[in-house]
Image (cartoon, rainbow, N blue to C red; front, side):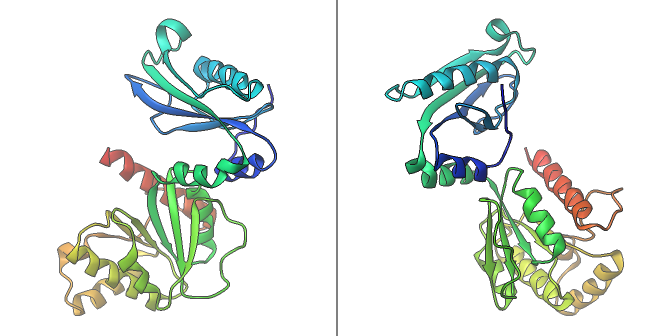
Length: 274
């Protein structure tokens, strides 16, 4: 069975030319391969994304292809006991929905499949920002990518990445969604400091940015700490800033290596928060 594991962009582009069946995990009971909200698109040939593989996915693909062969078929909702009926060691129960979708559904699908993603703001359109934006778009995040310069963003970006020009760049901090994870890596240390100050002021007023990470060394952070102290920020407030960023032990300085280390740190925090 030909299979293509791709992104939401692949799915939306393909819908312009052929119908597919959207399969979503609506709910789970006990242990299951993937959590509620997980999706895949089933085509006459191939797949985009996955609901976890194994017999569950095999049966779901078969059901979905049945919908493709019957254009008038109604959407399905099915309950799959993983242990008794499918022989999967997870042993839980998965509830799936399936419906046929086409070109007319593309805009609504984009909204539905991205609205529950965790928000991340990347300040800085450089090489590390680009590597991070592309990597986070493959993970359960919606990315707001911000820079003060015009023309720094590439033309083609994943559906989960939204670019924004802000001058001065720190003004964008006030408009971030509550719960946004912030990553600061602009082209300028002066801009970085302005963004950090804006984040600290927002944390002082609203306390709704769970993670603020600043790219740089311990030396850079020591310099920033002195400047922040001079502006009246307390030790407890400055402790809300993570610098350096990324999981310990990953020492490479290539943009892609930094991106992996930072994404891993965000995922660790996500898991710890439950």
